[in-house]
Length: 277
Image (cartoon, rainbow, N blue to C red):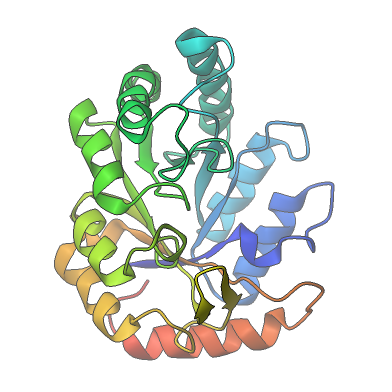
């Protein structure tokens, strides 16, 4: 497995210009060999320069691309046009894998317009041409359950599309907000997964309308990593080539990134001893 960094770790701390170049330096600081980060769709970075620096440092850049996949502006054609623009930028940067995810604030399994069954059907119809656009550029997509749907629901979309360019991505804490156990989600998603994000949170249940979730260093929260980490080697279709990226969620205004990174790295490297690049 290829240990990396996920850009949300530094949300609010990356510079407005050249944030990807800055994040590559953070990867180098911690001897990480992958970066999960958004594609530069608004000229914040030059994709060719980012791609060259990543290659020089021996870092695999996995792109992020998010859109409204249920009721996309401009319909299927509008969505496909936006995908094409994003994927062309990915190619310029030497990106070969992209984690894609929807906009859960607009549509999720708890909203009713349209009903859940129709949401999943629309996801299937709308993402099929997106997968075809990726395949035309030799790109691999990983569909991420992103605080919106449960694992089996998203896997059902991926399997209904049944396109070699569309696989899955997995984030270890995304199951919690949709009332799913991460170990169960891992069982469903990992056999189809091309990119993993390792994140941890502490869940503080109280009443049904008063549940608090706070980020923690990896291994110190509510995710059962003792169960999930062995599953990576057992269930990933290609574990040696799969990126496993640290995604930390610090409290607002916290600057404890270095301490959390050191604690998380020590835990992961100990637990996955001999399995990491």
